[in-house]
Every structure is written in C-alpha cells, then in structure tokens.
Image (cartoon, rainbow, N blue to C red; front, top):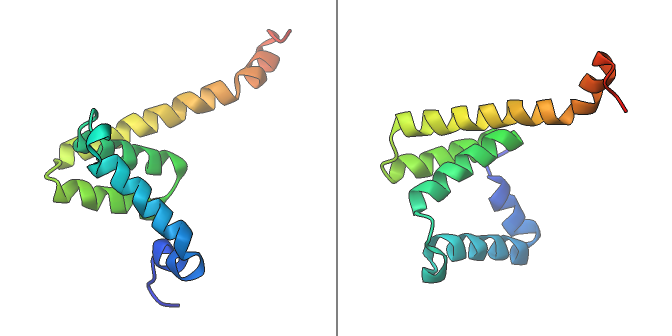
Length: 107
C-alpha cells in the first residue's frame, strides 16, 4: 500500500467531492466574509475537533498547519487538554441515565 492520504484517494474516487472539501476550506480560511475568528483559532479548533473525533491523521495534519503558522507547542498542548476535558465531559453526559439508574435516581 502506498502513502496516499485520504484526500488523495478521495480525489481519485470522487474528484468533485474532494474539490468541494477544498473549496469549503478556502471559504473558511480565505474569504473576507468569514474572518471574524482568527486563523490561529480556527486551526486550534481543528486540532481539538480532530482529537475528539479520534482522527490521528487529521490531528497531525492540523498540528503541522499550526506549527507552520507559528502556533506554540504550549498552545497546541493546551488545546489538546481542552479537547480531552470536553471528551470526558461528554462521556459523563452520555451516561447520565446509567448513573441515575445506578444511584436509584431514575424516573
């Protein structure tokens, strides 16, 4: 198996969808109408989202992009800790009914 990225493969299989994804990225990062959130924050959000969704490849890609934009290692580490915290919090929310069942508080 070669080292093609998922995007490389998407371009081969469904070039229109690959183009659409790249157009969406361009819209978010380059269109003047969508620059209220600084690029740095968008990239940090990308790292956090990729980490929470469990995509190692995307987390690495967004981290490389962040480093190219001079985002510090400390900022990246901190945003990963935010993502980690949010993942923990959502597990608590997901098991609320189960916790209620175990504590006798179910309705």
